[in-house]
Image (tube, rainbow, N blue to C red; front, side, top):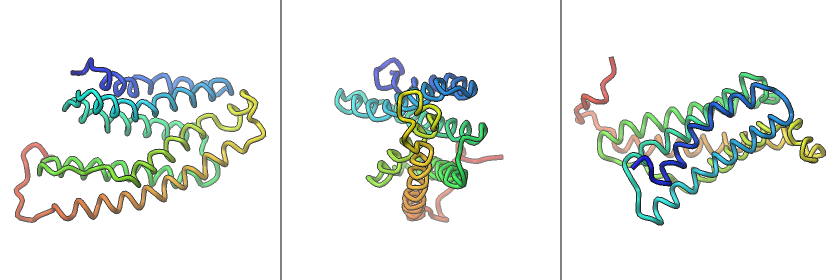
Length: 200
C-alpha cells in the first residue's frame, strides 16, 4: 500500500525535490548547507525503504515501481540545479551528462525487459556507483560556501565533490555497459512488440 512506511520514505524523496529547488535558488551559504542536508537525508531513505520492506516482508508492486523513479527524479533534479545555477566546477558538467544519459539508458532497458517479464538486477558495482553519486551531489550542493558555515572551510569541498562525481561517472560507464550487454541477451527479432510499449 502507498501508506506503508517504505513507500512513504520513497514518496518523501519526491516531496523533497521542490524544497531542494527553493534552497538552491536562494544562493546563500546557509541555504546551500541546508540543501546538502536535505539531499543527503533524502538519499539515505533509498537504503532504508528497501531494507524495511524486506525485513517486514511488505514489498509491493507500488514500491517496486516508484522506488527507481524517485531515485532518478532526485538525482536528475540535483544535477540540473547544479548545472543551471553554475555550481558544477571546471569540467564537472561532463560526468553529469554521462550520469544522466546512463539513467535514461537503464530506464529504457528496464521498461523493455519488463515487457518480456525479465528483471534487470542491481549489481554490487552499481551500488558503489550510487554511493559515490549521492555523496558527490550532496557535497557539491553544499559547496565551499556551505562548508564554511559549519567550520569546514579549510576543506576543498567543491574539489572533493568533483572528484567523487568523476568517479561516479566512471562507474556509471562500466555499469551502464554491463546493463546494456545483459539487455542485449534478451533482445530477439522474433519477439512481437507489446501494445503498451509502442510509441507514436
